[in-house]
Image (tube, rainbow, N blue to C red; front, top):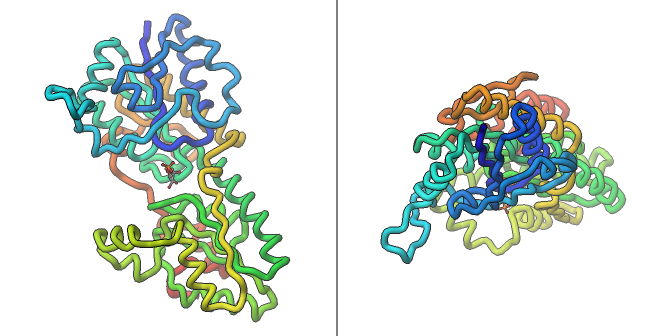
Length: 364
Ligand code: F6P
């Protein structure tokens, strides 16, 4: 009889419940006596030993549900070696506490769903002797080793819907609108939503922008009888000057920034440079909320079923990844600590450039 622990960690996204269901239903189908323990709020639950034995009925009716029935939390990798209880002299570290929970419960495997940080910690658990399989979740689609992550497509749908809505009001008022889209380090989401929503300018962290060229693009559009513009801007986009700063200087510069976010700063600067009014829309966490789209339901289900298959076959230490239309086993040590960035020469970027969409760099 298998004893499995399951947790979701990091920012939530659409499709987590579909993935949980995919794992659980497959394992119950294999052996109805399987024990599944759901840890509460990500790694915190594993550290504190907070879990609940789940029943088959817990996994019914959750395919279309947003969020995660297990709850989640952020726990940075660098904090894994901190003591659980700072005040206690002999307190185990967080990683030690997690490993202790694993052995105390005599688990056969931990199923961990998460993004980048989560995978680094999952790999650490593997290095400490735990059997682990992981599933790739994040709206950012920035996990190394998989073509796609679940949550990404649903977030594209939401962000595109926002751009579509902004398009009509921007046109009516003849305004420049900046739509700030999630993506601190990596710009897949703003790239795809920007392309799907017909943005005129797409700014992503991987391609620093030149504000003077943005001004030129806006003016050129006005001269071509299009006196409105849509800028899809990643929350982590940087100007050429900002990108040249050292990490330390940039973090000081951000700490001292008085704007709520970088798109307000760009809006303020542009407002003084162009004739149109400039406005900002920030959909924020709404992009991660709500029901998963059908594509993500299918993808998350496939990832869940594939993870269950790995457990049944005793193949541990892998992420369930996607390559083309196939599921693949990706070794955790290869995934941990690596980001899948947008290549400035990515086909979609090139297609956009070919159509006159401005991506930030000097070229027009
Ligand atoms: O990692 C997913 C993500 O949604 C990022 O795109 C975003 O920058 C971040 O999480 C927001 O984090 P939090 O939920 O902690 O505010």
